Structure formats: structure tokens, C-alpha cells
Length: 236
Picture 1 (cartoon, rainbow, N blue to C red):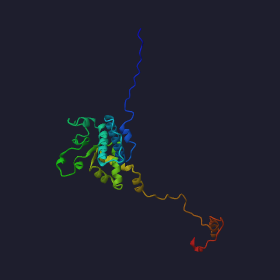
Picture 2 (cartoon, helix red, strand yellow; picture 1 turned 90 degrees about the vertical axis):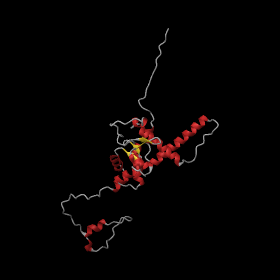
Picture 3 (cartoon, rainbow, N blue to C red; picture 1 turned 180 degrees about the horizontal axis):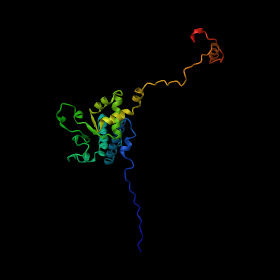
Picture 4 (cartoon, rainbow, N blue to C red; picture 1 turned 90 degrees about the horizontal axis):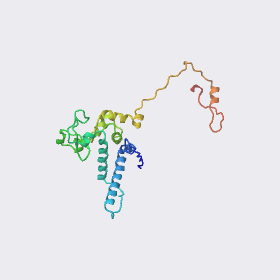
């Protein structure tokens, strides 16, 4: 006699906890790199401990500059992987003309995608010749733009865009920078238009109170009693 066996299968369309969703909790570029650097450092210590059981899990008290740069590369690689899957996973293949990065001639340098071109022979720093490509719709891109905006004293759109392009190349950068700067609370507060006095609804005929009535309105806040006014009579 055969028994019926029931099998229950459930599938998830997307990851429950994505790193991109975790990145959206940060609004500071420096803080995001620091947290990811600590996570990578702890991950490395766990791997070393699993391979060598005699080694102890010792976490350092500070993060070095090299670990911050490594964390930055890992963040940018994860940001580029979803919007540019073909360019990121197969950099050796020629790009299609329909690709958003076709005119940028992307190349891979230390992991992330960079802008290619003939500037490789120019006497400029490497990060200025080959900027890191960033998608305009990502939250990390907006955090980076906001970090440059605050670092340069809440400068204008053109100055912030020129400063960002010293290291990063944002797709549709002009509209993206304008959108980020338009949501800056400090800039909107300082650039707010001046208030204008609303026109009165009276017909222009004002009543003139007598001096006796005005003396009754002058009160002392402490004793709540009337005090005679020493101002001359022609002050009204």
C-alpha cells in the first residue's frame, strides 16, 4: 500500500533583506562607508577564525584608511550591479547602442565601472580621468551628492556638479543634482522669498481714540493697575 506524500513549496520573488534596502537607512556618505568597513572587518575575522580554530576573534578598535577605501569599492560595486547588469558582469563584451553607458565606453578598474575614453593619456589624477559611474535613481548616489553639497558650504548646482565629477559620473547628473539640492532644507530656508504684508480689508477710515481712552489701555503687568503716561499730548 502506497502512502500519499504532500510536499509544500514556497518561493520568494525577491530577497527579504537586500543590501540596497539597508543602504537606504543612511543619509551620510562617511557614516555608510564606516559601517560597511566595520562589517567587512568583522566578516574577515570570522573567516579567519573558521579556517584556523586556534586564532581568536579579535576586532580592532579603529578602522584604517585602506579599509574605508575597500568598503567604498564594495558599496559602489553593489550599487552598479543592479542597474548595469550586462556592463558589470560582462565588461569584455561590446556594448549595444541601446545601452545607457554606450557613449561612456565603460572600463573596470579595481572592481567598479569607470568612464573610459582618451583621457587615459592626460596628465590628470586617475579618479579625474576615469570617474566612477553611478546610476541616478539610486539612494547612495543622492547621499554622495548631498555630502558634496554640505562639504562645500551649500553651494549651487553647477559648482556641486563640477565637484562631484572630479570623482564620480552620475547618469543624468544635471537633473539629479537639481533634485537633490531642491530638497535641502537649509537652502530652501535661506533662499525663501521675503514676506509681504497683506493688504488691509478696512475702507481707510480709522477712528481716533481720545487721550483718556488710551490712558485706560496702558496697564502694568505686575500690579494690573493704571499708570499715567508721561508722553506729550502731541505724540498721538
